[in-house]
Image 1: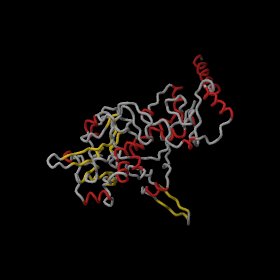
Image 2: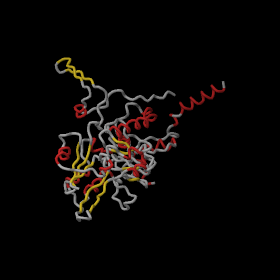
Image 3: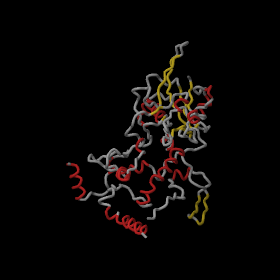
Image 4: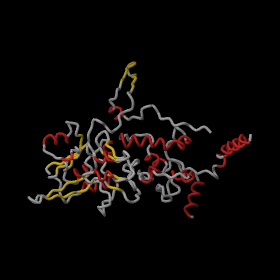
Length: 251
Length: 144
């Protein structure tokens, strides 16, 4: 019995108009006759993880209030994790942290999530390569390779990762999650790849206090880069030199 | 010579298999979308390799327009239960389980991925009306 062999198509994947305009990769157009053109592409169109970009967040702690958790509920809804009943073991992709300066009594509140470090400790320690950083700076867990050893959870200074202890059903199609793997904030990578904004930022701007800003840190024309240039901001645990993609102002 | 006879018997056995498929093989549910141009045999043999290749494209490169995604499989191959809603992999009627149960191959995909499509149920309606035998079979099953 002859079985057909597995061969991957050599033609570029189906492109829509947006992809076509987006792919700057060695595009040549030859006009054969008026209205008749011959086009050739230099390899496949660029995938959505763009090495020229570095996605990040800027959180204005002054605007964030203690009684608001719009970002947390939006993340939970978007990615299909239940708001934790037992915070020690239940998944928390994002959580609110309240701070108080004991000397002055000043209280502040901020959202805490994966800081998407440039030199991410979780990526360093992962024994299987499951914990990885995308070309555009988003730190993710490839759950196909995750063995659930939880080294990354130990390594993360922000306590940003969670382990799934129990079997799950009815996950979101864009955010698969399952028992025995580690997970954390994905910066809503499925939305970002589609040109969108993370759910927490959207919720903060609509029902919250407008304290969060999302954008490309590498693009000097982006709102976030302009704000970072104009106002002072800090990276949490800057002493570790991890260069996180999430920065806080007025903390 | 004996070896040749055994081989011949084996080959004729294989050829006879499709004829007996109704009795022996799994009854594979029909999909709602357009058929795979590669053919069903190719997909039966290679679907896992295609999906592994494309899942790496999506997870690591952010390519969301891959040709072979598990999400697309689940949407097009959804099988509806008695409540007209797609069944989960916990049901024996689930498209993936029909063959995997038959071949005794465990599916790990649905430990993390959802085995049901997340599109409106009206989009899952069959494009053509079921014939009377199909309706009779459904009623028989539903009343059991």
